[in-house]
Amino acid sequence: MENIRSNLNVINIFILLLIYFNIKLKKIPKLVKKLYDFTMFKILIISILAIGINNYPVPTILLTILFTITFTKIDYHNFKNEIKN
Image 1 (tube, rainbow, N blue to C red):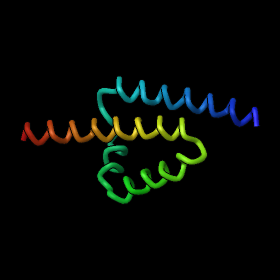
Image 2 (cartoon, rainbow, N blue to C red):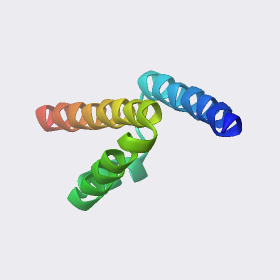
Image 3 (cartoon, rainbow, N blue to C red):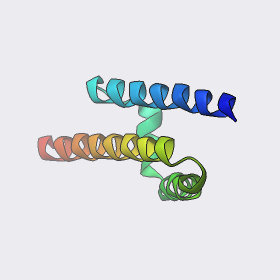
Image 4 (cartoon, rainbow, N blue to C red):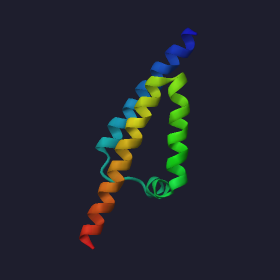
């Protein structure tokens, strides 16, 4: 059980680093933008997060924050591009 807990700490640190680099990232990769355009992808991610919250609450909450930040950045860039056009 202790091994699982230590791995969760590593996973939490990795997710926090992903959140940090996502915030610092200026441009989002095209692949990520394309995936976020698909409704089924969003439903799949939300379903995985809903299932994971029971077993691993902290990593799931961190992944939810990462999902929300990425989704907001993509919406912001799309809105900015619509205003330019």
